[in-house]
Image (tube, rainbow, N blue to C red):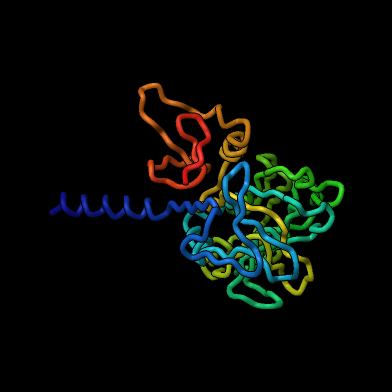
Length: 292
């Protein structure tokens, strides 16, 4: 009886450990389960990724890709959240999207939007109001001031693909551009410095948008960008992990590990090994291959 109990206990703990790990990936080449296009965005051909989501900016809170509603519901135990994706300004002119939201999440569709909410702005700043709140102000930034990446500091002005990542863990938050920290904040957990509600109550944020749907009643146009290769994890991605993704495109792709035993090994852009029937951009024995 003791052996059976020990075995059952081991299985339960193993199952719990497995349940604590969550990774969502979508190459954004087509609609997948739980997705829908709001407004006039579409999937378009792209030389780097094959097919990507192209958003438009014709109005406020009108154009974005709606994502599966459970993406932010898995961080209660890990107290961590990472969101990453490739983004390209495409044909949009620098200066026309200075205040655009790039990733937003709310309890439901509203106009104007209200809390609970989590918003990532294109210019490199954040806002959380979910069972506690913080505006990630200058005083909380490790540099003493928030760097704002619009106007002359537009990080998308070169019309190339760039990798955006936000990593939240306990009382720390970081925004990365291409694997380099753009802003970092340390919070003390007090009122106005509290992001842990995003971990405990993130499941309340079911209306999750890529590319638009600005916060409050702010009249900023949706982001007219191209998007590819979305990753959401309930863990804190390290700078090394992010840089590995960045280095894989477009020129670093040849530097990934290969095998010499004749077997074909495939990875997606999130670094996860995939099977032969995987669709999208993969790294196959060290080479970038588009699987259709």
